[in-house]
Each structure stands twice: as structure tokens, then as C-alpha cells.
Amino acid sequence: MFKILRRFSIVSFIAVGAAAILITPLYRYTAIAGMIGLAETNNVALARSQLRSIEDEMVAYLVTSSEAGAPVAARPEAIRGMVDDLMQDASIMRIRIFNLSGRVVYSTNAKQIGRDENDNPGVIAALHGDVLSELAYRDRFNVFDRAHEEDNLIQTYIPVRSRGGIGEIVGVFEIYRDGKAFVREIESAELAVLGGAIAILALLYVALLTVVAHTERMIDEKARALVERAETLSALGGQMLSRQVAERKAISEGLHEGIAQTLSAVRLSVASAASDEHTKVAVDHARTMNSLVPVIERAIDDVVATALKLHPPSLDQLGLLPTLDWLCREIVAKHPNVRVSRAPGDVEKQVPARLKPIIYRVLEQTLWKLASWDDTLRMQVELDASQDGVAVTLTAEPTVVSMAASASAGDAAQAPDVSAIREYVVISGGEFEFASAPNRPRVVRARWKRAA
Image 1 (cartoon, rainbow, N blue to C red):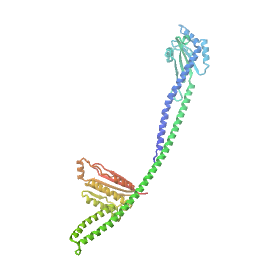
Image 2 (image 1 turned 90 degrees about the horizontal axis):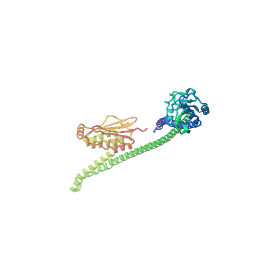
Image 3 (image 1 turned 120 degrees about the vertical axis):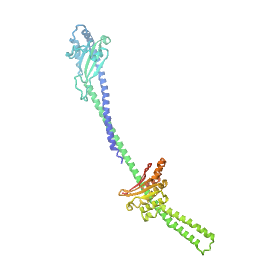
């Protein structure tokens, strides 16, 4: 009944996919920043340890190279030998030494010796006493970036100080370390976490679908139970109305055939006794008996009216349509300003027998209520019977005089209460509608579907 699983599966799949898409760049940014920071810190520690091993010779060389006229292209054997020993570490790609002017005084790449790099941010920071380390990170996802020879290299600039590292700055020590191992760790961790996140989201998606499917089954079971209960109540309501109609019919026949005829016989006997010239009753008694005749006649009229109100015999003898015509005449007789008519059409045979007393009762109560509420109405009753069921439409619109009076009074009148009629129709298994608006016809509709 309630098909929410398909809609929820689509919406939740889109939501989970969007969450995964949003998590991916957030995690990449956080993870890469953390890994890069760790790699740079490690490289600083490595650079410091390497610097200590050649610090004395490097300070002496920097002091010498800073003197006026000293050749910057010189590569002292002591430093070169120590640097060659450091280069045995496969992760170290290049080592350079700068003097105070920012000139390269030593490099593992001989072509760079003598190059002036006084505008290098790393050299500038180191000459001011700061340590600068940076990873030129480029992973497999940077497909739109151009490859560069310094991609995934960790550059670290450390100031070189005299007197065992506590004196004045005499130069800069730069070390290039291969960061591909860190990049591989970053990518492995990234893929592992993203795979785990996707797996968790997938499990969450499946769990949600399972819960929703179970909930949908529960809702369907409850809905079916409610439908079955409603059908049971409708069937019980129909049986109750059928019994009520039968009881009304029996009471009506008892009143009409029994009490009314008995009262008629009593009236005839009293009238005959009062008019008999040979009776020995006194004149006063005759007058009393004559006064009882109209009382008995009114009692007979009341009994007949009650019997007709309970169940008019014409409904069984003549049918629904003639009985409705008689009802319209009765209302007009009671309310002369009301005009009641039935739309032409012969649907007598198409209306099921069980619905005829129900339709009559609905129209009777509605017509009398509307006529009592406003005695300046034009009302028309229309019946329609088809293969789908039976429909009754009652249209009530004010006359021209009534509409003018209503407009002058601000249309303060409220719509009549038809809640009892609505309940009667619903209990009988039908549908009820009542449309009411100021200066507009009031429409009452009742529909009963044909039983399958």
C-alpha cells in the first residue's frame, strides 16, 4: 500500500553518495596536511643530524668562502667526502650550502655552484634564523597539474651557526629528500580510509533499507488491518441499518394497520352511538361522545403521520421515485415558499433494493433540514445510477429575493449542520460531501459504490 522503500532507497542512495563525495576532499585535505607536516618534521630532524656530522668543516668553509676574493667554485675534499658519505642514503637527493649573501658555495650538482639565490624564500628564512621545510606534493589525483622535477621532494633549509650551533649565522644548509615514500603512505592511507568509509556508508545504506523495508511491512500490515476493520464496521453498519429499516417498516405497518384501524373503528363506533336516535344515553353523554370524535381523528392522523415518517408504504408498493415525488409535495405543502423538484430520469431499476430506504432517509432528512433552515430555497434532487454505483445530488440555491436579503444582511447566516446525515451515509458504506459558500448554491452529494 505504502510504497516508500523505492523512494527512500533512491533518496538515501543520493544522500550517501553526496556524503561520500563531500567526505573525500575533506579527508584528503586533512590527511595530506597531517602527513606533509609529519614528513617535513622528520626531514628537519634528519637535516639537523646530518648537519652536525659536518658542521665544523662547513663553518670553516663558509667563513673562508665569505672572505673577499675567495673562489666559490672550490669543493674542499673534506666536505665533499663527508657529503658523499651522507649521499649514501638513497632518500637524500641533493645537498647545497649557501653563504651569507645567498650564493651557492657547495652543491652535489656542480653546475649550481656559484648561483646567486638571495631571493629564495628558504634561504631568506634560514638567514633570519628560521627553519623552513616544505614538501612539493603531487599525487596521482593532480591530473591537471604539470609534472615538475621537484615533485614530491622535501626541501629543508637550516641556518648554520658558528661555535657549535650557538654562535652567529654563517650560512644555510639545504637538503633535498625524496618524499615518494611519504606520498605512497599518504595514498595508501587515503585509499584505506576512503574504502573503509565507503564500506561503512554501504553498510549504513543496507541497514537503513532493511529498517525501512521492515517498517513498510509493518505499515502495510497495519493498513490492511485498518482496511479490514473499516470493511467490518461498514458491513456491521449496513446490517444495522438494514435491521433498522426492517424495524421501522414493522412499526410503521403496526401503527398503520393496527392502531390506526383500531382508532378508526373506535371513531366510527363513538360517532354512531352519539347519532343513534334510539340510544338511551343522556344528552350530556351524547355531547361528550361527539367531542371525542375530533380527538380520535387527530390521533389517527398522528399515527398515520408517524407511520409514514418511519417507513412510507409507497416505498415498497410504488418505488423510490414516486415516494420522492410525494416527499417533495409534502415539503412544499409545509413550506409554501420552497420549491422542490426532481430531475427527470428513470433510474428506479438501477438502484439496489437495499439502498432505496437509505437514499430516501438521507434525502428526507436533508430536504426537511434545508427547508427549515431557509424557507426561500429552490431545491432539486438528481439521482444517477451506473455500473460504478449510485449517486445522489441535492442542489439548494436561494431565490432572487432571498439572495438580495442575504447580501443586505452581510450573509451572516451559517450553513446548516449536516453531521448526523454525514454519519448516516458513512455508516451505510457511502461517501458524503457538503459544499457551502456565501451567495452560492449549497450542494449535497452522497455516493455508494456498487458491491463487487
